[in-house]
Length: 324
Ligand code: SF4
Image (cartoon, rainbow, N blue to C red; front, top):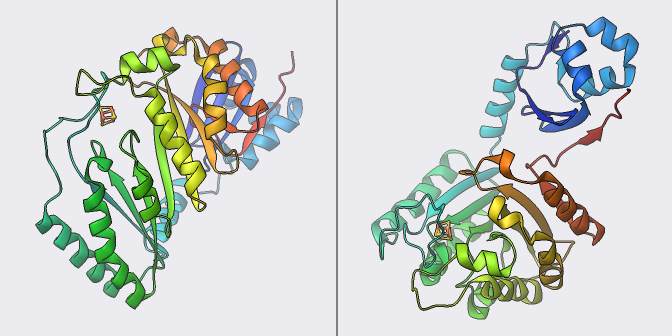
């Protein structure tokens, strides 16, 4: 047997989370067992003393047979996915500008920057060429920024140019928005009703803390928290074919008061369509975040019927009870 190259180990107290990036699965077990058996290569002993753990590690591709060429199989899978021809995914960066000024923003904030007509023409040409060379069944368009909804009219313009091509060629379109959502309007929601749409919208903790972090560029404008809740409500009330990820950014600052958010957000989210995903702000030291607060928040959301994840470890969950 061999240990998968794609295993990642995250230690949490006496436990260890193993995440396998190839099978996208994870498993939580006792840190001692991982150190004593898996990492030392004592696989026979592991099978004898911890048969369930051995079985789970094999099943999840964390422990693989000697004959299995994991790397070659992975590359072949990726190539199959890439050239399967079912879906073509385009990310369209509408602007480098944003109406907010979050401290951790990666963007350059180029005022009034916007995708040009020449780029839009190139996108349309590209889609036609791509389809003619390798026809696909579904075109996924992800609108990204900065804040893509600064340019809602342009988004609708792009869709109006692609629609006739989709009708002629016979592919479907889904649309995706990574947005702060503060500029979402009922008119825009009505205009995208005919598409399957997905949204990623972020809150940074409870109202008071969020409003100190996700401030408007216009310093006179009040905090964005309630405006984002309004947008969640617009989506829930007026769209029927959508999925939404409400991302909750956590840092030592935002984890305080996290619990109070649950009652705020619950009325605006449909548990059948919305997932809550807790993420650490990438610039902060995760050791400074109180895991207890996060775990309580995750549990409370789950108790209210939501799928709620932390650390993105959401697939193929298995807990192997530690043997002491
Ligand atoms: S909403 Fe997004 S793009 Fe806008 S400032 Fe915040 S992180 Fe940057």
